Image 1 (cartoon, rainbow, N blue to C red):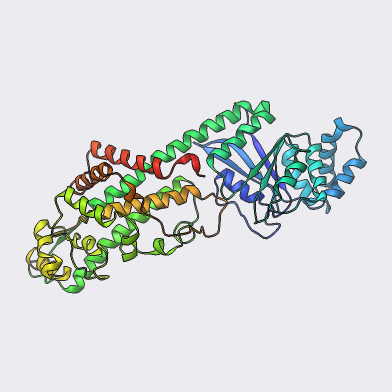
Image 2 (cartoon, rainbow, N blue to C red; image 1 turned 90 degrees about the vertical axis):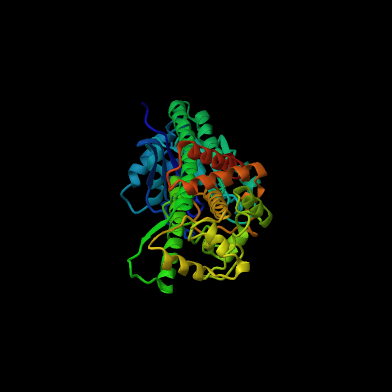
Length: 477
């Protein structure tokens, strides 16, 4: 089997080379910074799947004194056929000296056989002094492609294209912060035209990446489904001593323990999805999702207002489940917020009797109901949480989080700003979809965490359909 393709990402300092490497390698550990000269040595980033390296990206330092380096090469030129050898001689002559340190470092992997990804900033004006470094790259004789990166608000793409067309057969616009998976595949495909000898390894790389992408999607479906199953079937078994008295503090502690466990399940599901897409930094708890609705606790009032079904759909869901009446309970923690009482009220799931006893019209609070239960029962099962909107809220938040994971590239380090208040995805479900999910969620609650294969498959299918509709792979990174 032939060696994997190697791409040297070169250009002037602070033009986004490291960001492009991070985006193409799907590696958020690549150091990126607005400070010029962050990359001072060549660093290889092998892209591996199943332990096999399918291609290698080399992050290089920026050109430091290209005009003087080109002058040295021209002074030693014999003819055009000797130019690649002259570049190699230049590197050998200055490799251990004080001059041309950066040029020697960035040219070494190219001399050793790497192809060139030349990066410029299309938001800054084209300058003639870039021509020296482009000429040096042409002298290497290696196939190359130019990428016009976008770093700031300016737009000088046309002038850059006209200049780059003189030196490179292929010139592409490239936004390291928004590049899609499809665009990344197009870059690899383009190199088949530049390097016929790389046809087989590039085909293998493309096939492997597409297969891996599909597998990640499948694993995401399973992660979201398993998260729903865990949360919907979670319960705590309490054994009480014969003379044990249940205090208000004990009830509050059990309630806190139960809700904290559900919060942890949601976080675990998110971390699983992030790891599937190779995010190692915590970018989706503070940075990527830093906006009021996602900073809210899972059981905060604004969370229940922003996600899940709308009020009419909730009523319809209860009707389907045969639980339209007796479903709202005043909560002793956080107040009786929008359907939050329903969520917490279902916490001590002891059937219709409890729900009827705790109707808001009847005036019994959750604390009073819980006290009666604890005082009269010596063996108590706390959970599963019975509110019918709760799984829809979890599903909504999971889908919204997943869309953010997909739309973010590994080059991004700053906060992702999402304008406007998100509209609940599950409110767009058809009546048939909602009814099917209500029935599925009911089966899962009753399963004790072990739903049958048919129920799991039906939930996977429902989640997959939602992903295909609201987080299509083809449109995002």
